[in-house]
Length: 362
Ligand SMILES: Cc1ncc(COP(=O)(O)O)c(C=O)c1O
Image: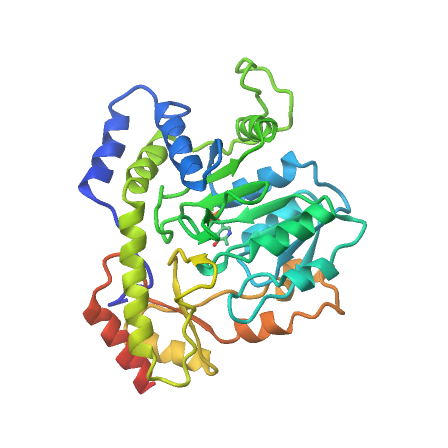
């Protein structure tokens, strides 16, 4: 693509940070992991961070630590990335899909409450496209029904809701650091929590079930190798130092897009000024009725763009769990319209202008 959809932003300092780890004997479970965990936990305003190999692994370990299992129900939006749905299936639980609000594209709190049954064991709230979900009513519902909340903040590092950081409001927060994210570790993720017992369990689960006090050949729990290497952590740590600068830059780009697109009446732009917080500009996703035709035309011109997301309840994988009576109309409608435009730190004003001109013409 002449103008790619996304591109990581790697500086010489990032490269040096990774290379300097390679000059040490400690390539896994070392000081960089501890520093990175602390920096992300601080960002989320909670005491514990547990680095893991991906956002998906983080979501899985939260459900595992909660003891979610056979026949339990976990509520989540259908309009999201496959990872949350997969994590529910890993534990043989049943995903219960709830519709979204049309403006924020986040789970609708009222519909969420109506979906709670005696079998519900947890709620996964996704901060979709970095837009913080309406956590106050959601937490009130969750507390009323004694349900834990996992914030899938993989797309929302640095987002704020009523002054509080995304990832730090629920019982757990999960971040993802895949290369399309505002800060990347190549592959990687982080679970954050206030709960020290849960943090210990998740730490053991990511490391083959070894508790901190156990030896290398002692395994109390059925664990996983979901560790994150020192090289990944060093990269994440270096990137995290620039998070404010990165988020400011991405906000500037989003504003430029929205200003240019204002004059195209067929394009619905994402919300810029939120009632209750600050977005993390992870992606810039517009909505258009004839999305697939628009996407094809832009792609032919070398402009990277993509559909975003495909509803989980329509995936063949989830067919056995789909409730035919569930009302997911907004999810289906929005998913037929969403189009992610090129969005990365080095995107220029000229490139944004070119994308917007191509869109206007299309
Ligand atoms: C909302 C959401 N949740 C979870 C994930 C999974 O993260 P990872 O790709 O690191 O497993 C992603 C990744 O893109 C995501 O966007």
